[in-house]
Length: 450
Ligand SMILES: Nc1ncnc2c1ncn2[C@@H]1O[C@H](COP(=O)(O)OP(=O)(O)OP(=O)(O)O)[C@@H](O)[C@H]1O
Ligand SMILES: [Mg+2]
Ligand SMILES: [Zn+2]
View 1 (spheres, helix red, strand yellow):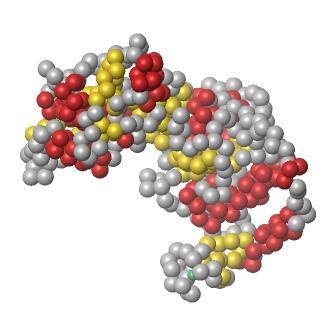
View 2 (cartoon, rainbow, N blue to C red):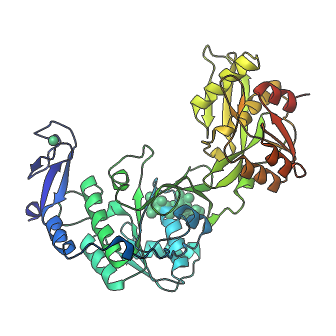
View 3 (cartoon, rainbow, N blue to C red):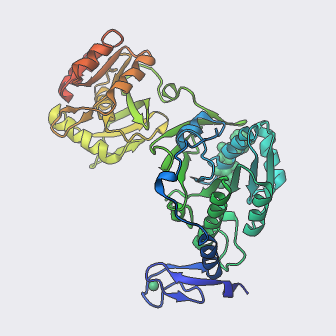
């Protein structure tokens, strides 16, 4: 019966067939055929046709009233809380803690709003066991264990929650389609129906999606255009810290991050993240830099280990910064500090493996490397900020003011920075010892003298 309801369409050339083929018979592309439901689209169009256009100046722009997720860090990544009627996709690798954060949040939200948690992967008992471990309070929280999309939609319509969670999109299926749960076709069809339901009923919907290391595998990637907000939950299995990172947000800035730590009793927000990624030890090979993540400055340690190599090609590895960045910094040191590094292996890692994308961490990386090489600790209690140009100059950094403020807040004594505007320097002169430098050589002479 299902074959009558659905059709198979090549996403490359649009050819329609009545069954699935691995290769399109028309354009010969592989894996381009996706199952779609025939009847649905026309039915929706009929309903939608009742709508009329409105004169633009009659539309009120009343402020969006958001509600809190119960976590300040989560709210920050969402752009200030949950927007009613919005659809959020929370992606992450298996086991990273998606169900945990969402269940904790569901409990907190349910103190003020009606919440429905749909568990498609775990039984009610399994959810309850986690709930007890997390030791949460709830008021208006309902849990529904189901994988069938129609039953899920019926239940959402019956309960009328302000916030609903689907855990996870890969586990639910539309029985009108032949494709198996988790396939691109199912994931897309289920999401778009849920999306319509959320918009029509002003329900905020959070959809959980599994993402593998390479970011691919049937699913979440293909949903990104459909939802309002895409958030990734990241971390590794070794350290306990977890990051929420916004990738797309129709209601806030992207590049925001939220930082958590995983405990047996669940996720806890890290209120002072800078102290989480720094150690404040004064040993050779370690410096602190201040990077910028979203609207927030963050102090992160940079550690380097430089050893005489036993290989014909010296080893270079990085954790938390890109390997290309390291190669470039090493080249700048060779040329402009005049140290031959080809005889040395070089390992660089950030505190907690925190991923730094801000190029102003270059100076910290360079000083860490030279500090390890010379076996001299860098100038005590200092932070290093500045991007290294290819000709050895230290270039201006974005948001230098908030970075210096963060250093002051952390009680840092010295800060090594590119040349500042006079006003900025005057502002901070009495709070921190500011050393302005214009090139790498000056920075080395200042911070690594024995
Ligand atoms: N008893 C426990 N004590 C401490 N941490 C635990 C405990 N049980 C689970 N965890 C943590 O919770 C993580 C699993 O969390 P959760 O089930 O929320 O992840 P998930 O992303 O939803 O996983 P899945 O992909 O299986 O749905 C584990 O990797 C572990 O870090
Ligand atoms: Mg889960
Ligand atoms: Zn085709």
